Image (cartoon, rainbow, N blue to C red; front, top):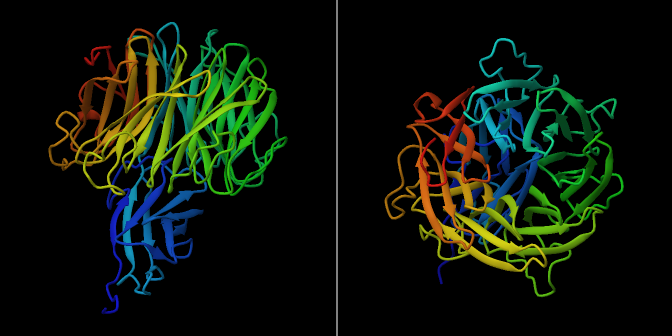
Length: 511
């Protein structure tokens, strides 16, 4: 047999070359034509304005993933990614030349949204500007914003919070008394409880009252990178922050390279009650959290077999997702893990009436057949329901088009399950060809049994990325994210710096 002399090549990348408005909390991936060797931090290089970006490289199958140590910078920062000729196939053939591509992040983005009992809407995100409001002063490269709207979509107030370093907001929630909690990551000092940043980046949580007054702020970290990805309240005086750490938090034990974390704080004064780390010897992270009167539910991703899963659980490969339940004392009640041989990324979690619902995206056959037929390349959204008592799966659905769908959030009430995200396909006609514009925002409704009810897709000629969804208990939803052309996004409320707000009723009609 003739020797193999064919050089490997890059099949696809995420983000795509020249993509704009890329979410700041995502990973960077590259898929090769065949299995390769030598893919690591010396051959998978990411830089911003000539400065190297720190992160970790993992490789499974044909896909390598670069996970930044902290969220990417907003403000339209352009990133360059290089795969060098140090990458080779099993026969020793190197890439024919360095492979380069670029992408840019949004000037600002709405990263999370919550609805209060009185109909108010709260949106958090981060910006390098001032949302177009001259009275708001940006403190550094990237600050956090918090905006309150009344039930009709009118701005009640805005807050811009930051230091001279970078901050990013990842979660917001509201308690029954109107308290508003914002969580994220900072490279500066935001907490009232510390004198300085503990490490590279710390997680933070800040409480505001309904009038926008800051009540307390707490910061938690190690000498490594730590970040919050979500926040939830339990209605019993507990507020919970989920995220990830590359270090070891006080009172916790590190399992490996990067662990998922969960921390409980006292909602009244911000006092830290306990911390938990959950992980494997590989890279793990919590991406979202929710709570009800019976427990706290954490969703995330893993590169191994998470502790506490049923004995028959198998790590399927690449990235699996997990759901874990804890009680208010921090005891792990149950854990479930699912996956395929490719990537299965959980991005959102919600709980309602005895069930917990998660969403995310997969580039394999998690709950059906990959819609585009390009396993390992194109992504479909997924939605899965579990029983809260024992974690038993109730149903799972996969939905996609000829393009890729990236689900970013889920919300649920008695009217149904709402999944949001963005796509470069056509969800109204899944068999149609990929669209020419970068991405559209989408909202998909399922009933509580997992039957799809309707799809809404909206976009401009530019990039329109939805990051979060909230529902008010009557089927009225709101989604937020980033648009490169917010002035052309029909029906949206422009927040400033590209951030948008879209509202729908339970039938999918714009409000």
